[in-house]
Image (cartoon, rainbow, N blue to C red):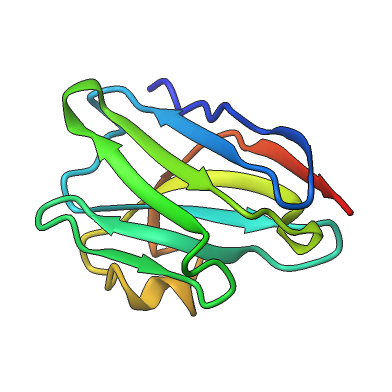
Length: 131
């Protein structure tokens, strides 16, 4: 199984924008819920945004609300994360992931078990925001 490979990361100054992409194969694409998570050096992995693939409801961490937008291109099996007004605190490795159908698509943002709440993880893409 080919894992999703994120792209679009890079280095930007505060206030800048980036658009992350996560193309998945037909085997790793989820029809339930997918999301973006991030992990900064020395910190635990945290939820950023999730998308219910069925009704397209979106959920965001408080720290990114109003700045980030999660979306999908179902025909091309690609998940996106548009990030605007970036801050140095957004610096992290960003991962896309599929959420297990037994896990709530919204509450997984605030609490999750890496061992049981997820299906596939991407390899990650680094985002660095300088002040």
